[in-house]
Length: 366
Image (cartoon, rainbow, N blue to C red; front, top):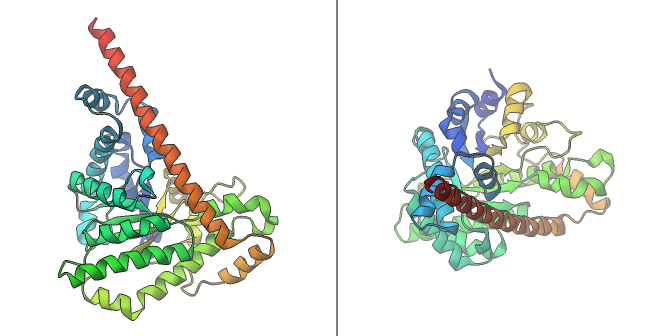
């Protein structure tokens, strides 16, 4: 049995952190579904920027959309949703068989709206309406300014992937926004079955801390934070408040591990996959990490629901001078800024490519 299958059988969903038109066209995504137990995927501006810039798979579509007068964000949204709609259709059987718990794809609102709740709500509505796929999650950053947009979007019936979470505290704030949205739906007599995941980023903790702590602590911070967050997740699902919502038909907002590719070349390339094996969660993996785990990965049980030794590990980091709460805030802020840069680079890529394709068409016609 493949390591990916064993992980799936432990109760964790394996999603691919990648989407390109090429892997849709050449059957690679289909093979990952059939052979590597992939049951969903996530996307981001950096992924699309690389896909659009690295080959010719999008050239014809960009040429036609530019010719039709499309530009900027609207052109990108059409490109992205074309890909994600195809992927969503491929995962639709999983979505239905799992009772809408699994089988999702994700598309984010413009990162420029991270501090604009009203703009995020409207953007989420547009994406949800344009996608016409029930198993598409709209990604909204879980910054403090974004929490009202998450609650309002859930209340409006829009499935949400809360992204850019780094700490247990940030996760619980996102979970609170989700539950408030569901409670409002129940009070209004609306269907409470609205899908959501809370995406906690892991490896960026270690990138930020490794050069500031002794070698024996390297690559331990992200996992310790994840362990405490998993404990909080399991505790929340056992509360009377959540049980009441579940009894009314609400779906759990599943905890999703993001940024699970190993950044330290001296560490195992499957470090975070092995460490974060946990039932009722999602691990969204970069393609290289997925293939590495499929080839030589191993599972060693599942995460402790009580957090294991995470508190002791975090105490060691504190003694080494790492302010965990301050670093969590910094990572979230820097993540939001990085998303903005990626978004702007992506839109410029599309402008440049559209202009180049138009000129090539004109030369060919002359």
